[in-house]
Amino acid sequence: MDPVEPAASEPTTNREGLVRAIGPFALGLAVVNLVVGGGIFVLPGVIAAELGSAAILAYLVCSVAVALVFLCFAEVGSRVVRSGGSYAYVEDAFGPFIGFVASMLFWLGYSAAADAAITVAMIDVLGTVAPILTEPLPRALFTISILAFLAVVNIRGVESGKRLYVFNTIAKLVPLLLLLVVGLFVIQADHLVIGSWPSMAEIGAGAIILFFAFSGAEGALSASGEIKRPARTVPLGLALGIGCLLVLYIGLQTVAQGVLGDGLADQIDAPLTAVATEVFGQWGGQLLLVGLVFSIYGAVSGDMLGVPRVIFAAARDGSLPGALGRVHPRYRTPHVAIIFFASVVIALALSGTFTYLAAVATGSLLLIDLGVILAVLRLRSRDGLPAAHEFTLPLGPTIPLLGAAIVGWLLMQLPLAESASVGVLIAVSAAYYVIRPRRRARR
Image 1 (tube, rainbow, N blue to C red):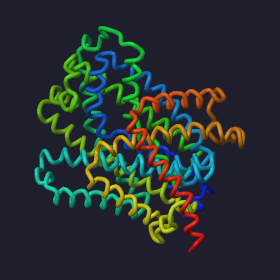
Image 2 (image 1 turned 30 degrees about the horizontal axis):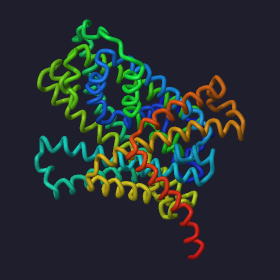
Image 3 (image 1 turned 30 degrees about the vertical axis):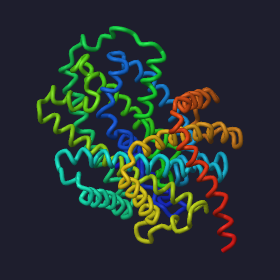
Image 4 (image 1 turned 120 degrees about the vertical axis):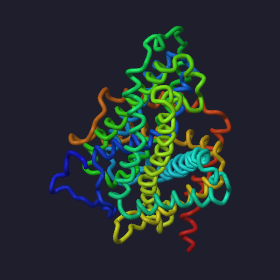
């Protein structure tokens, strides 16, 4: 599937027993798949309500912030090539204790909580056309079945998991790209004129919303132990994925504003559905509804591929129970970690605590991003600059410092309740890390 195959001498299985099968194209699609969730379908209306036709300015600010963060991911990801993604990057830089806390923040605080929340949202949408899903028992059985299906697909091999998220990514992008292309010929130029320029504070508030909407790309690197030629694939795959996302998001915002004008700000719940109905008629709105379901399910399927690798890596390092670090003898996948992660997501989704889960997820992810940015500076200080075949950020420490400043500022905007939730998770993770070795020693 990827345009460049590895050299004949390159190993196709890493030292952990996993198969290196993910190339630049697949990694770029994973980035797009994990980021384009349900948010893209409501984002244009939310930003228009904040900034009106000047929303494009917030996109430009957010583009800079996202680029700074993922440039740091590209350098660290080209240097640290074992499984775990963000967890592995932070652990290699700051040691096993900080690495373990980062792994808990990622797979439990962010990924499991966010996947459970958007699964609840997806089933709520399906319930509007299939009312039986509003009943407790059918809803629970449907939740278990769709998540169990994802687990089985990913247990059968990284290739099958990759094919599933490639299919889901394409399925959800088709209606969005169709709306983008056709909508460009329907927009009215006067709707795009900026009537009154917002203040920097207003632009900053819009950029925060957009930064959250770009969350999830970090998860594509969780399967870092299965990426072919990481020093080349990680920066190229991230560039492809983030570049496509920026074009898609800015294009859809322009089309939405150009078609609906000031009316876009009134379409908070389903702005793109309103745009599609205006452009194509009633069938267009229905098509976007199907796209919404594929979008959410695709994001969860991508996490089911990547996040268990974080759990697997933590178990291999001795931070989590050893059973989670087992590799299936036939399929060469971390099957126990996949089953465990799917079970956690199912349990959280059945709880239905959407608001709490979403709050913990956003704060956890910001801390993970900050840890990876600081890992760039730490690895350079300890090990020197990356090797000649690895990706090196230009301008010395400027990009990591700017990225840390932006993420730190975003963390300061979090509400107290959200900050407290993340703090509790960190405290529990730290206590577990300290206590578990003592229990193991007693046994």
